[in-house]
Image (cartoon, rainbow, N blue to C red; front, side):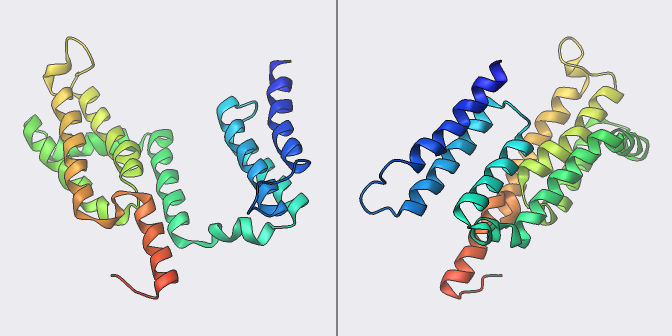
Length: 208
């Protein structure tokens, strides 16, 4: 019943805006598209269904009723967007496959004589991945953090009494290293790449 009420509220928003007069300066199409936009945001908040289903339903409804499939899908043609999706997919794969733990064990075996050396190794790993990963969130939270967490757990360091065995240093080191590498490369934030793409298309200026 609760899911039905949430879904009814989401559907009600674009229906109401569809049959109301748009504010001065807005076309009917823009006003109705705004209704679908608000419905999408509300769906992400209420979550009657998984996010993927909500977004796909809103996009499909907009394309069906407003006949604007070309306009709403044009953003998906951006290579920067697919780079971001690939980065987050890689991040999920690290956790699902246990690759983060395996990388951690190899790092400990090769360089694990001291916690300080492990800190340097994970910092170097972040630096190497920075130019190739179009989001520091995908890189730091999705790739580096699982590895750092695995290293901490491998040396028996967990939140609480054992944190000072090295876990808190490894994780804090990863946080601050990410701040530094984020200042060094355009790929620190996903919108940077998209913004550069927009600037190039609008102004014709090509920035390397």
